[in-house]
Image (cartoon, rainbow, N blue to C red; front, top):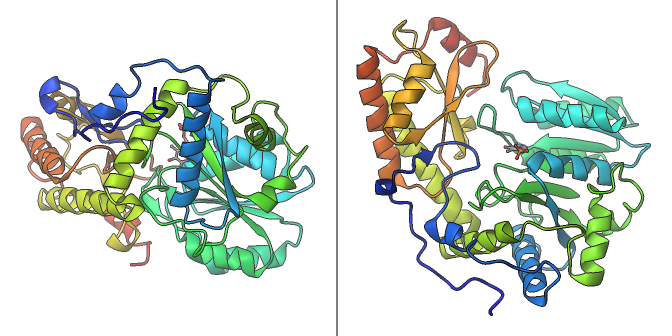
Length: 399
Ligand SMILES: *Cc1c(COP(=O)(O)O)cnc(C)c1O
């Protein structure tokens, strides 16, 4: 049997199958061939599966732009948060100190992870969405020489903001500190090329922009950095160094790997390559966003973020001021029409989110907007314009 699933048509899902599109940041809508790749069983110790793991890791390192063998990829079982915890626990020495950059739920989760790890950290909390900027990161590092590492969130999925990781990376590198990146919802669609952005390690997972199914994540790290991480980890199963050492020695994961999920992921990677890699994937998502945002704005909806900060991953919209708009009702109506949207996560005003990632194209996004128009009519909402408080909130963010 060939270790890599045979190429199949990269089918977009057929809405006639009755499966709603997931306009969410993952798990997301996957290609039929990705699901079909899970229809056989693999022995985790067998040479075929070891070859699949190797092929996957080689492809992921290439996606990060490394051609010199300076970087390695270590897959880790579990959802994305397990892998963030594994990265922090493995790369930050026990006497290290982390600067956590937060502007939403995932940044705060990284801080909470540090608290669980019992390791020193300090937090820059920018609230619901304001981006952490390079100059303030630099100032924080200058003020505290004990900080050894910085953790940044690439796309903060809770608002959909694309954080300025390039300027953060410059500020960190200029001061000789180390950068760890949670690129969970960005890697594969937004450039994180090691030749352009300096970092020691980043983490992402199977079920976001590569469009696989959930079950594992992966750390891509500078080999020289990982080599120095023996004994740092707080947890046996979350030790990235030990997982890497075992992979190097035996080609196997420690403990049961999600074999079917890896098979599906290889098919997802094949489609990703066929689509033109990071640039091609990013272009489709950006187009999805542009079509969807233009349509929603034409209905009167307003985005939380000004265009400059909008990621092609997920977009936050303010809920309309009209008292006839009830999010739960809107959600159910959208679901009846075949689209699962996502509640918002802002603390100040009511909002909801619409994802642009997954096996969806312009035609699907046009239907999303038509469904939203119908849902508004059914609710008796005349205008989708947000309350004045929402627009005042948005005015705080620079263009
Ligand atoms: C999805 C995501 C995670 C991980 O979430 P899980 O639910 O554990 O998979 C972490 N960070 C960001 C920015 C994410 O988008």
